[in-house]
Image (cartoon, rainbow, N blue to C red; front, side, top):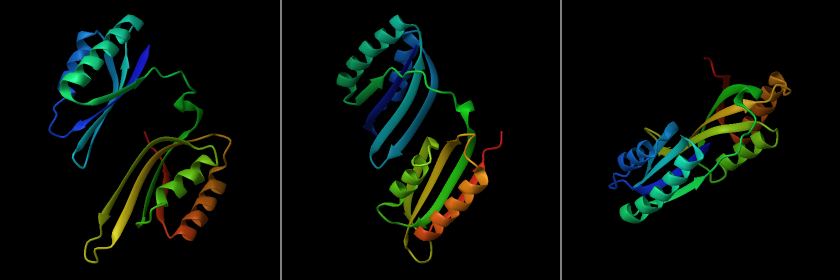
Length: 174
């Protein structure tokens, strides 16, 4: 059985060590772990695996940690979905002048074509020399085998030209 957990706290709250200790004490295992620092906030995303009774024990312990450390937890028991082998893994990186709806437009383009989005990271920063706001994105995608890659590339390049985006769409090499 698996449990997906998100934890949100301040940068000064050193909660990750306590969460990992609780996972170990409950005889559960970390399958995946990601952390990010966003402004003054710290976020952690964990996928945990264990027996149902160990997962239930961990859920109870997380409630106590949340109150004691002043952090927020959300958890969910994920259902089994189709595997990542049901498509071709691709990386997509874009760069453009900052606009509020850039990430929404890219995500809508992908989702309208039933392309799986496995991961997104994005950031805004000031360009060197001219100090213009730049928006950079990186997607990890799963492209279904029935989608013709050449057609998708052409369609995506037209999409990027219309939005004045610079993009690289390439397979992930293992």
